[in-house]
Image 1 (cartoon, rainbow, N blue to C red):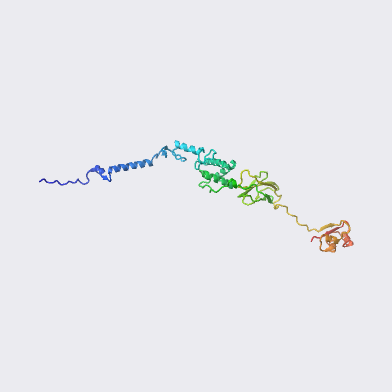
Image 2 (cartoon, one colour):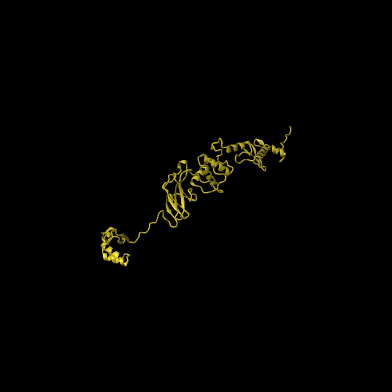
Length: 356
């Protein structure tokens, strides 16, 4: 009977690297898993480091180079050129105004480009070119805007977005409010324009309220253009100040928001010679305290009739006493009065009647 051979186990730790790489982990051997891991690492590394050190990037169209932030494509590529051409031509886009300048929000290289588009847009909706230029220029230079100018700038921001560099560093564009439309301009010129006071250095004026008026601007000057100064108020009265004494001034007033070419109310007034206010009129003279002076024009007049004529309550005798004792007569005149008596007056005589 043959002798059985016992099973022999391989020594511990035997088989080497090949055996380990050949060992299955799940459905694949370890070597296959290592190859897959290296492939994934290489793919991720290449994706995250494409162009590193050379400034090169790959856009969505597969172009390699420097990305143009305006378009998102590599600068100089066909896609970049097409995008820039569409943004700058102002033709065939939903935001086109027909003025030849782009009105697409966010497509402006600097504030100058934004300003050109803003002015073109305002002109295209009927705003006067000079007014549009003033509004945009003053906005970008952080100057104070009128109500009308603020409304125009708000329209621009609604259409084009804020400029690339806001007027104030780090600031936000002004809040968007509903600007005045052509149907809500104030009625001009205001009626009832007149002066209320005049001094050597100022002229006060008032006028009637105008329909749709948010404010009023009073202008003044020594010429008909009234360009020496102005003030804007929310009420229907204002004062021209800093004027020269005894000088003719022209005053104008308009209601805001004012439509280009609207009329204005005007008047002229001369300032006072002194610093005292005339209140718009002449100060009345104080009432005289001197007695009335009556000259007898015909025979038959008497102290009694004169007293009645002037409503002198003392009567004729009292009037005779007043003339004899109180009136500024000479000694000879008083003697003549005494000799004639209370009711003996002759043509040409003078009688004084005290004021009550």
